[in-house]
Length: 232
Image (cartoon, rainbow, N blue to C red; front, side):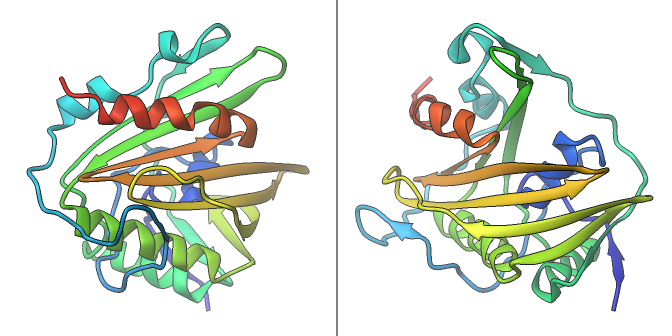
């Protein structure tokens, strides 16, 4: 069965992939607010409540070109497009999209995002997303997205006339923050095959997601988390 949905970019790495390949425009992140994931934990499982940061505060904590170093250029967010995105062959992810389409999805209180192109040795990209909400909501929300994606080793995503063949594999999460999730995605579209890594770290009431070329994600994750934690 094929069901078309307007899924969100960012919280699902599928949609990060579509952004990086120019297959889809950005959309508001959404929620999947039911079951919790089983992420790696550090420092216990206690989820404390605190006031979410504002979008302006999150924006100040995003990495910028000076943080990343030479060879990085801020990339403008693509314009919204009306193409619906359809998930084929992954019931859990398709179900998550259905919740999104009806407005019952990941509804994190605050968010901010930046994407960069790196041309140091080859043309690669890395993006960072910051979200702030209650620790419990961040944990269950992002956990459900990762669970849905990892439940399907292979599936397809369509955007307009573009068909992307997807593969998802769990990756070792770094021992950072309070909770961690990480995955590798392979995708094939237009005769090209690429790999995207996505790592999510929850630290208190902030969720840091870094996506893109695996080497760039690994290189900048620590500094992204350190800046996200900074007090202003």
